Image (cartoon, rainbow over the protein chains, first blue to last red):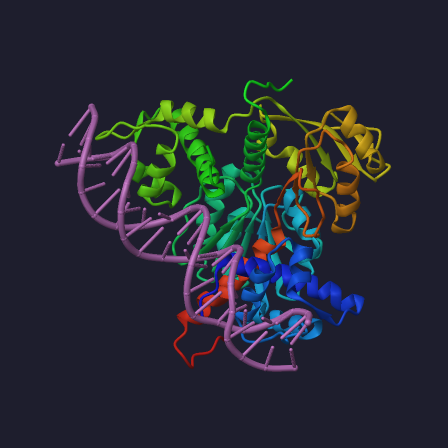
Length: 218
Length: 218
DNA sequence: CTCTGTGAAACCGTTCACAGCA
DNA sequence: TGCTGTGAACGGTTTCACAGAG
């Protein structure tokens, strides 16, 4: 079955919401309520959830616990993924400290950096290697996913090295740099700069449309 | 004129590419070449670019310099935006150091944190205030955009304070927390956790479809 | 002949409206 | 009656295919 990207994105949101409701001891919730809390239309919520079988009760709503484990199964990883992080600067460190990184879905099993202060040490419990060793270490440790938090100028060379390891399957990059990646690698990007530019662009548009013709910004 | 979000996203990419081509001294480029470098269909490139008037030359392609300034005008800000950053942890610091933050489009004019080590000091040349002062300082300094890099638990209270300033127009949040924001504020989110979950989900899907039925992952 | 610009078609995700079940 | 599940309609973006300019 094919699932669309926006659907997966919302499923993750539903899951988070269900997890927090579960903690609060809430038992039942309707698509309307889910929608209101997440800013999503109720019909959208129902469609997303019905995608994977009839999980709600008509006339009642969704049972929080049941929905929670249900989505958990949909999103579940077949195993714990082996992950490495390249670039242990501020961004890399922020990632390591991120709540999401205490996940049962993956382990960060190697770090890479060029800073001699960091290479050879353990950082937050993980071995840090020199970036020249990406290919070797990734293969040895069977790393499947690379998180790329290096400066734009180093992005392509890191990727080139990483793809030499046959174990690599996916890259999540936090760099604006355009990088070339073979088809067999799944590549995602989080581009902060683009998001910011978009925000500014649509702020500008809003302002333009709010102003009566002839009015000026002071 | 209404421009779609995916179009804006691609325009930003085109702009980057043109800027780097300009530096390399390249004069002319075709929609096909742009598309190949960015992983976008040529027809999509042409449609995006034709949106704002005939900028290319038939039978030839696009003049790099001309296209560059053309997109620059489309994306241009009406003025320099006044920006503040809440949360000067690793992520906040990474943002401050990001190349995008040496932009002529905006100035980071206030920082907020709760750490007494930071409050009252200048960090990277910008005054850091206590988070309790968000509303006051934002209004005084006429801050229009807030970058939210605080822990999930602090997100809502920061937003609540920030929206009390009538100067606020947009928020870019780097938190997975669900926050409630009034309609007048443009809200964008960058959710690293969601992106990572998506990557893992589609990696799983790929693996499933690659395996012949009955085959198992070892 | 080449490569752009663009109307038309195809495609995809969202929303609607209501049938179906508790 | 209340709320889910879902086929059909809708709206918007992408892709196609070709006319048109250099």
